[in-house]
Amino acid sequence: MYILKKYETREEMVVQLAQDMITVLEESVDTDGQASWAVSGGNTPKPLFHAMRETDLAWDDITVSLVDDRWVPESHPRSNAAMIKQELLQGKAKQASFLTLYREGKSPFDCADDVNKEYEQQAIPFSSILLGMGPDGHTASLFPKAKGLEEAFHMEKAPTISPIEAIQSPVTGDEILRLSLSARAISQCNHIRMMLTGPEKLEALEQATAEGSDLPIARLMRVLNHPLTIYYAD
Ligand SMILES: O=C1O[C@H](COP(=O)(O)O)[C@@H](O)[C@H](O)[C@H]1O
Image 1 (cartoon, rainbow, N blue to C red):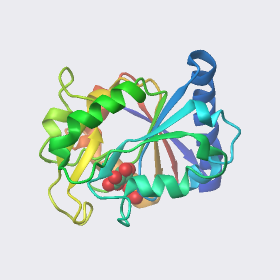
Image 2: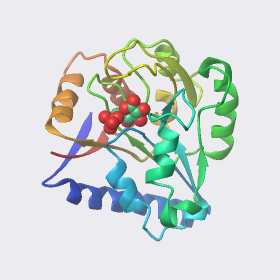
Image 3: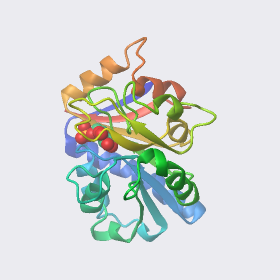
Image 4: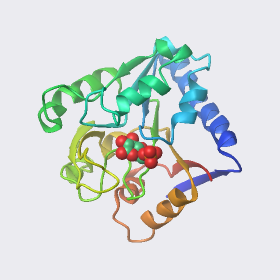
């Protein structure tokens, strides 16, 4: 179900994961003239973004997009789009194109079709997807028992982008409305990596993927074509 790559230090993990990402993005640019990288929000990937933004990739041939976002404008402190702009799209990486998910004045359920078209025209196929995981077993914004979850897991009909209304919890905070890559869209990518840090996350991963688990991360692993590669350090 997953391959755990465990490192002694977070710094070492970041070096190795950055090299893994650089290799696949370079290969895509060399082969197709462009690369597409979908990245998660939250706090965990920030050190990776700091490493990536100073690398000599052909950033102007790379489209960065969001794995998921809260339904909030970029002025909101929990906007993933704002975090990516601040932490990744700086330095050399400033030349990358960026696709966001939030659209002002509409609900995610109203505008998912429009965003979906943009993603399908500009981001598909993804060269690489960087996932995170929450302590409740969510990944992307595929939250346990959320409205929209079953549609996002429909392996024939799910669009690339799925609207989600999560059940409010300490993990979601107030921002329960989201747009997320669907499980189907994630499963179509050949290079999917997850970054996890801290023993609490490791324990959460083990619990969430225990036999019989129906949490989104466990369900996602079951529909992927390859075991999920997880980079981890305490
Ligand atoms: O809600 C979210 O949380 C997950 C995990 O975030 P972290 O801060 O615990 O790393 C993140 O992967 C996702 O993009 C975000 O929207």
